[in-house]
Amino acid sequence: MSVQTHSITVSTPARQEFFDITDEVIRFVAESGLTEGIVQAFTPHTSCCVLIQEESEDITYYGTQLLLQDTLNIFAKIVPPARHEGQYLHPGPIHIKNAAELRGEHPSWGLNTDGHIISSIVGRSESIPLVDGAPVLGEFGRVYFGDLDSVRARERTVLITVVGR
Image (tube, rainbow, N blue to C red; front, side):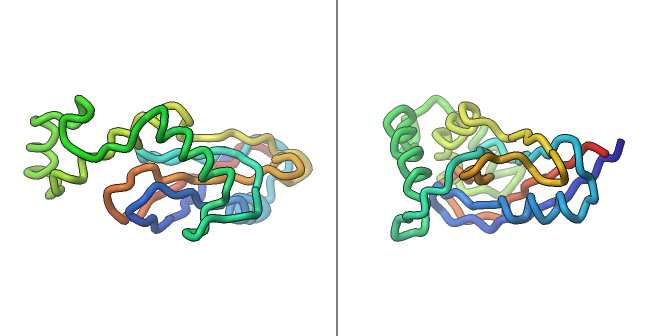
């Protein structure tokens, strides 16, 4: 059995957005030489997610797949976007103080509680069977990385791990 890991860096805007990483996953699987096993896509960021969804082909003016925009629209009704302090319990005064003093963060960057909640619902990883050298995604399945933190542009990471033979 072999284990191989690859890192993808995604530059994200200051809005909730999804990025199709399917081609990178397929490319890494091919480079791994493994034909049977499991492929996992995981993000370590607690306000991000990884999901498998159909490619809806039509897009918004920002380039977001309509099905993924529909997903964001529904989540905005369930978990309203954080717009002002006190809207959610998090971030509290200790978090804001530590973020500023220890990490040099602006207090407004803490207004991402909705992203954290949505991330915990959707999940930060997907495991995909690897059969005959290809991830099994179904006819229309695509792997998407979502940055749900809308307060600032950032560099984000997705780890692709292939375990198999």
